[in-house]
Amino acid sequence: MEITKREIFHQKELSEDETNPWQNALIQLNEAAKVINLDNNILKILERPATTLITTFPVTMDDGSIEVFEGYRVQHNMSRGPCKGGIRFSPSVNIDEVKALAAWMTWKTAVTNIPYGGAKGGVVVDPSKLSQSELQRLVRRFTYSIISLIGPNSDIPAPDINTNPEIMAVMMDTYSMIKGHTELGVVTGKPIEVGGSLGRKEATGRGVYITMEEALHQQNKQCCDGVKIAIQGFGNVGSHFARIAYENKAKIIGVTDIFGGVYNPNGLDIPDLISYVENSGKRSVVGYPGADPLPQADIFSLDVDVLAPCALENQITTSNAEIIEASLIVEGANGPTTPRADKILNERGIVVIPDILANAGGVVCSYFEWVQSLQSFFWSDDQVNNALSNILIKSFKEVNLYKSRYNIQDLRTAAMCLAVNRVAKAIKLRGIFP
Ligand code: GLU
Image 1 (cartoon, rainbow, N blue to C red):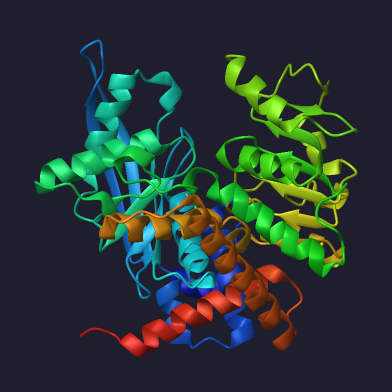
Image 2: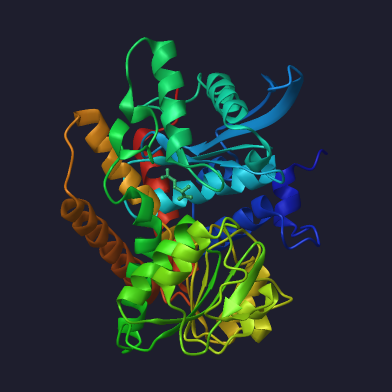
């Protein structure tokens, strides 16, 4: 008898590698499925992405040579609405990572109850090695390669690691040129001048701040006078989170990025650090004069109240979960904690606000941008930020209610249970075609 992958999974023959994101996404799903006693037929659907597109495409380089790149678009599930999720450019991106990120988008949109399914895309490329015109040709050709999937009613890309509003503008333009009319709603995270939303750029960082504030209030702590924070990652998520926390009087004592880190026990001057990163030409916190150097690995053991991993997957693992001093972890990144590390953190009583809730501010604001783009009617800063806080605070409360009602130990499992339940209900109500 042939043993299917699913049976292998249920026999717990998982690989020793704790850092395969797709395996980790399946572990999290199965954990939630057990708690809510999910119908096995629904689990079978959710354990596989609905569509996986792998494309190789040529790009003409400035010197006339041709490079062939590999790209992906994965749609995990679309039962609750069009698929939604970013596109990352990275030399290490691979299909298992994109599958996991697509599934996490399904849960993220469900936990915040916005009308989307989950998707993600990626291209294996280091964009810093390309000229502006090479990058533009790559973006256009990749958009063309995934055009059968994307669209304002089917699948709406957005920025992620190493992609930005300018790249979204080019994706929107490519799609629009091919369709013969301007279609603002096909991507989000666009520049304001071409249908972007106010507040979108800082929305993920703002959401990390909002969920941290809620969790601190729950622990009867004042937010954020004197709250000590360590941040891993100082890109679009980490830097905006740092700025908003700083404006609310938090003390950010350590920050690391891909090049190194900085430490100041009295608190870093975040606006000054941001302008150093922007103006020093290095695009890094390294060498900032108002602080001491900090080795990257030391960010986890700093004596802080809050640790915010805002970089990549698999940063908190069995090798460092024991040394974390923070009592609260807010996951600005997607998948920064492995399931094995999660177990250690839970046993140690460290509260983790999971990625699908903590960093959902980006996609929630993308939802506002999409609505504005479809209606060609644009909101004020205040409208965006109020709507964002309302949705995130409501989601935070709903996850906590789920946690206590079902006697669940940790917020990740509670958030997953809430999300999986919503998706399962949608699948059941719609029924299976044909
Ligand atoms: N890439 C972001 C995320 O991981 C945003 C996705 C979106 O706005 O669609 O949540």
